[in-house]
Image (cartoon, rainbow, N blue to C red; front, top):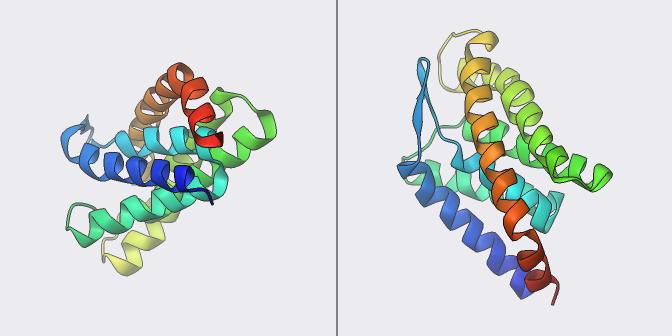
Length: 162
């Protein structure tokens, strides 16, 4: 990995950790934190699938280490980042990354959150409990990420590749 790519990953991790504390809104019974989802779309398009998953993992790890997140950040964030990067690599369209983030986090991540919350966190809510809040958060974040990457993609890609 190039130094520029690692630097971009570090910047995205920092934005994800700090931004999540300041940008949120109520989403039914939960709070929506769209920054992680925006970062997933941006890193998938600008850096690729592997780095996007690593960025999502590091954001979740740092937020949990600081007591600012939950274990549910891992399955949702990493699956969303993977699917965003995978779909973008296959279709080469920014909307594919945003769609992958919504499906990966909002649907698949919500279903994976059920056993994580049941066995590791000791809560007994059903899988359908997570889908609405995960979807609201991932749709909002994916839209933000898509808008940002649509405006900055040429600049950032040329910066990373050179």
